[in-house]
Length: 338
Image (cartoon, rainbow, N blue to C red; front, side):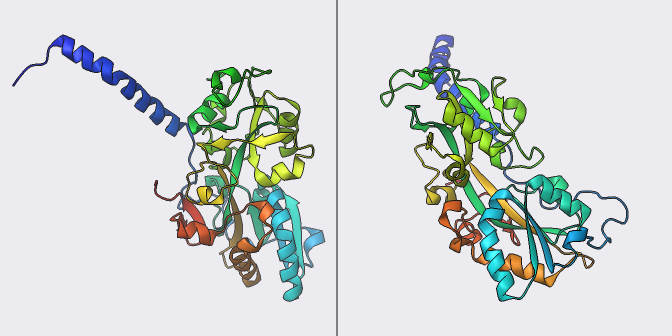
């Protein structure tokens, strides 16, 4: 067998080193995002006797047929169809505006028939006797100030920006943009629902991965406001909240890998990578189960495509057709890579 000289080996290494380095970098970037979903078989432990406790509602909700708590996006999207359903079926339904934390707290207290979440359930949410039903997903847009001349980023560049690996907008200049007037990048982050997978974790899996220069805000309105006021800023949010809070039209979504968050087919095909998952719960335990709650949730799952398009929620039917993985009514996995 002919031997390859040391110099020839060194030459080959020099030739292939850029390819090897690029492959390693790509693999590292792909692992920076966190899990999209939690294990549906992992049920959280509860105190003795909790599982057999019946529902106990607050005093002002005792006379309702159903008590519902929804995160703020689901509240806006689902309140009209729930009210129409209540009237058609002669039901007295209490619908309360909240957050994922409030929805979880009501489940733990067993003080609600249906809870709504803007995230996939985490392991602590999987209480005994609680079943999750995925209403759909909606794209999370990467946002910059309207004065930012940039129009598109790759997934890798987006992660580098939020990690602080890219510090100045001028590092991204190309033929589409001239020198930035405000060169220093200011990531704006809102790491809500920290115990749950998906949502912002699809960008970076842990809060510690974000740049130390990031500005951590507590509300969606603060996120939109800071980007509106600062040409150096970059952040993220679903399209509905942009329309809701972008009063002066001072922000714009970027293309990611040349794909727009408004391109629903790209989101359905999982080519656009960032999205939020919406879930409703019902009870399966005999002490808490209500046929009226199950019927309402099934009705809402079937009518997602009839919701106001401004909410941008993609229905379970479309996701199933595209190969997303469901366990019963819960979305638990992304479709195979294309």
